[in-house]
Amino acid sequence: MDEINIPYHLAIPTIFNLIGLSMILFYRKRLFSKNKLLWISITVFLVLYLVIVGNATLDAIFYHWDLNRYDLDKNGMFSGIEITEEQNQAMKKLTNDTGRNFSFITGFIFASIIATVAYFSGRLILKHRN
Image (cartoon, rainbow, N blue to C red; front, top):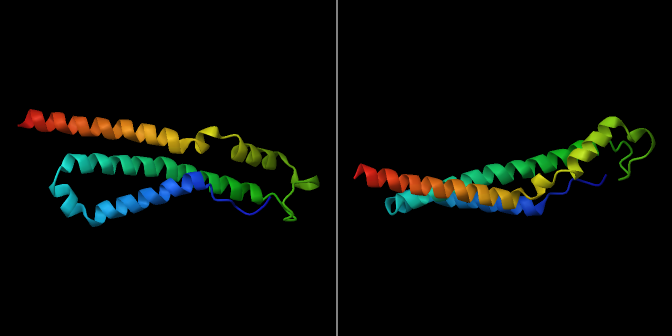
């Protein structure tokens, strides 16, 4: 196998989430003083999305690294004694996971739903409290 390829469709959203969370953390006093509930729900969205997509990114990198362990002569091909049951399982883990590759879409949907529920639940609690 060739060297480990970073799945950019997963790594780029992960990096943007880290930057967004860092900015929110850095400017938290200014942001949370106005419309605190909105910024809490945005933070919930970013954290959930980071967990989902970041985990998928790390899994993809790990599965590629795991498969590279079976390429004994480092020629980028599997042949002869390199093809074992463990190598086949590692290849299946890397290539047969559509959910990991589409996690940037499903993670966005899931995190949006949870953040929206958190926002409206907070609105209801504030309305009920007042």
